[in-house]
Image 1: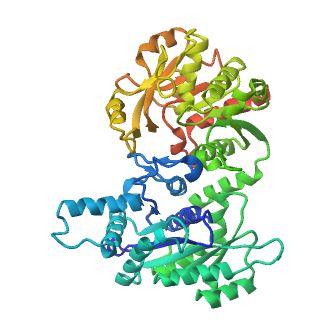
Image 2: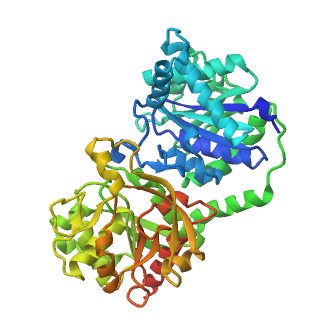
Image 3: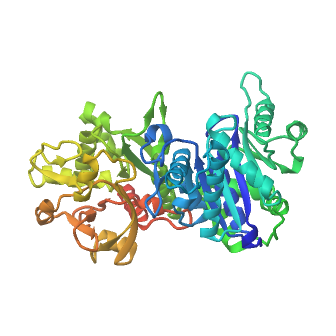
Length: 552
């Protein structure tokens, strides 16, 4: 094992196209090294001026993944946590905006002692400082740093410069993995290596040479292409790893180990390569196999508002929710069939609500804004009246409260302040602590964010699912159930089964099983804590209810 004062740093960069799989490659490398007894931590570098991912549009950037300390990050941070089975913090995430902000603050505080502060070297040095801070906090043997974007993009240059400087300072402790795409044009019918050759040359121009090349493609890499890449990219043939498209991202670590990638990395790093943890690895392989072998299906409708991006569907807006569903379904040996339903369709044509009877369960994930709200509320009502298992997450729980207030309490104009601040019955209202923040237009990083405790009511669906009285869950929201309406809602049968320790904030709302098989919403985001080998208990309870509904 590497000495803690001689940590190893692996930079993962991407070539040819974006979305080539750097995140899952970084996560998979972390998993296989961890299985070799190394203490691994991961860092994501996003080349955006945004200080964090919280203000980014999910249809353009994918979901915002919230860490336990409240940092709003890129969705790849979720992959790191899920593959490594660990909790990361804000030291594991940086953006261009965050780095520049720190450097400017230091300059204003005279921390540079009157020096002329320049882009180089001060920005790369701040990047290096942050990388080493993450290493120290985790006491890591290996730090995996994914540089977002694609080689050749202007905004990547300073991060590559930081990596180059680290390599010069400690040449034996820093090495590079390039994940590159090898297209097979339909009209040509042959896998082409030239785009990868050009990407490597562009990386070389930054003073960096890849030590390992992950060759992504539709099909496995043949020996002829491997030899060609080796010659023109100056990478040894046995360090060119074939990474063809797979049915599931959870196959990637398994495929990497078939090519003995962890052994090769340990050899390059000069660390002792312990025997794999056979028990842990068997659990992972068993889980990965369930993705293929599970044939009995459970059909889930996901009703959201962040699916459409131009002519395409971007399910990444709800990535953690999708993965959480999978983990709980596979644990029951079921194959989840997910269908994306746009909430606005129910507003345009209410008759489409009847189609919800074709599904075993319904999920409404988080969101912001007015688009599709009436469609969601009508879907919630349909699920409640037709006893279809319903699981609402954050926004989805707020829709439960609004629907119940309108149709059971008779408050026809019940709404949330976010949508209709003039409503007489704001059953969902802004948190008091948020009012001054919004008046000052301080939107970034100012919501209720991160890990908070909830106290569960005995005998409820939620408490039975968790099997305990207190839980810690991650939040990302500004609005809460209005305390003025809680007694009236409870008097009509809605159960607030989870509350903040002070009892002021409603964390979980549900109907008892005597009224509905599963009708539950959470103000928090349980999907952020779901893991491949440790499904989230609420998602598991929901999937079991869906299976029972299917049997009926």
